[in-house]
Image (cartoon, rainbow, N blue to C red):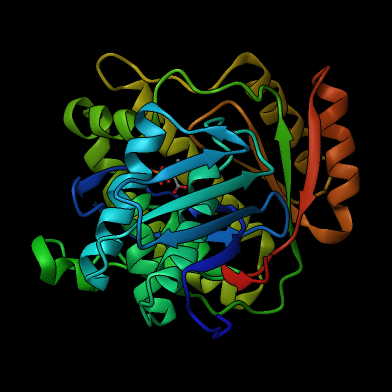
Amino acid sequence: LRERGTGPVATAVAHPNIALIKYWGKRDEHLVLPRTDSLSMTLDILPTTTRVHRDPEAAHDTVTLNGRPAEGEALRRVIAFLDLVRDRSGLPHGSVVASENTVATGAGLASSASGFAALAVAAAASYGLALDATALSRLARRGSGSACRSVFGGFAVWHAGPDSGTGAEADLHSYAEPVPVGDLDPALVVAVVDAGPKAVSSRAAMRRTVHTSPLYEPWAVSSRGDLTEMRAALLAGDIETVGDIAERNALGMHATMLAARPAVRYLAPATLTVLDRVLGLRRDGTPAYATMDAGPNVKVLCRRTDADRVAEAVRDAVPGCTTRVAVPGPGARLVDG
Ligand code: 2P0
């Protein structure tokens, strides 16, 4: 993270991340403490740029997202986040926040990860908080859990922290950090089959899953094992094993939701068509593995050298499907502007 001067105006850029070991379920809603560790790749595409202009005269915040005034839940979450920053800095000032997203918001494409990572970095600078990357990750987590991973580039693991902990002590132990990776040249093909907003927010869906799904606890247990195996596979640069673990972890997460009462189903017919095509690629000898988040879109992990061919195969399978190829990208940082 680049050190820059702090002041009333600060602009930050952050990229979305896609989890290979999923975060699904909180143990503390207020502090955004997860039930399990997760692990992700930060992308080099679809950045969010956020400018925070602290105004000592302002009693309220003004927030625009892609040039439109934020409202409802989105506005409430940004204000609650700035309240945290005001508390820590001792500066009660309101701010003018302008955020530009290059990705569809709320479509399961990790817009809240890049959004809150950029907001954390820009707001901390604007309010004069001198935070290292770990502290920024903790702070970003309070906005949206997955955002703590976008503070870092490349691969990052988010530590849930000790099982039993809640409160200020637990807050200290839950943050992301970079994960060592061996000789791996990965790409993620982001296949958008539907860019519309999700019907159920991931926050609500997680809550329902934890409280009602009989499959939740078994998945959480197996996910802990997946993480250990994933770290070893990344270090070994073994794309087949990395992909295999990522795919089973994601399918397991969706199984927990399908068993929730009532069921949460993000997977659409087009999602399954892409999954079939990915299986076909594998049968034909191309290592390609699918992961899905809180939406019908699919991210396909493969070798960078296979990415264009994988993208074409996926587009062929689903009429109207668009693809973008991502490789590991940078962590959140301050920029001019
Ligand atoms: C993840 N997802 O690990 C998982 C997998 C979606 C599926 O993190 O409630 O927006 O703000 O902490 O971070 C999406 O949830 O949820 C997410 P909150 P967030 O990427």
